[in-house]
Image (cartoon, rainbow, N blue to C red; front, side, top):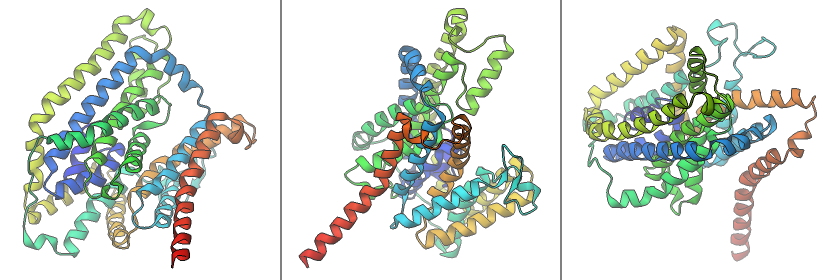
Length: 428
């Protein structure tokens, strides 16, 4: 999962869904001349999380797989709702604006053909929208082009001053500030990764929000806080390892990657499941060993290359901006080979500029676009399973716990704010 963080930090373009949170503080660190430190801490966090996930896979696979099975569709739906409520923590100055952007993202996530009825929703007759709005198109438009348009309109490029890379290796203070975030992100990501369908994206922004809540300097998040880079990168790597447990022990792929891996195993007449470690121990243990080797190689290869990667942002803006535009256009066109998607990307960039100018946060929109299909699928699965009995969302213990936390997450800050205002009025 490390690769997606490089472009997220250097040019504000998430390389993968799970790198969206990394852009929030990683790009700000790059603008402050700390791109090298941000990339290095990403590599270290990825390594630590990968090793923790491998250790968890070695010693806790069976009991954790049984725990993951207890998550009903109602529980998974409520977990996603908690994730949506947590998006309010990514707000700028206004929580209301964050909810508006979250709702907009959910609306956009319904565009396309209904997966059950086959009815086209909000496609307006454009065949290109039948498969839904491509995440890459929207993310590149809103993060990369939005920043480019801001630079052009405010004429920041005119000075021609390149961003400095600065030091490469994190200082003792950087490691001191981030080590707890790395551990918390690794553990949180690993346990969330156990739940089929949860994915690394939800894990990364839950870890980011958790660190923001726990931090004494939560206001620094979004302005270049190193914890805001370390936690989500650790979480998405931890989740990648956690997702291996239901695959290897139960034969249930929880992510696209594990689904492909399951297909590869079946091609070799190896069935993932409870008997895998007994019938094909060389495959099971070989797979775990390869993950450990891969994590070590990540650290060996990427730390020496951090300076090479970081050199990208030392390019003067007048050369860097056309380069970002070209990469964005080629990247989006290569995925869909569609002029419509290029126009959508440009439109997203223009919209992102005006939204950011008026303090509407972009991250909740992009993340809710990813969560939307997961919420809809789990809601429909639960409704079908319970024959339309919505009370089961409250009688299922796991679902109830997540819903209560979601309500408290939204309501407690508002209550505290109202109490604070009341005290101020009484004092005045």
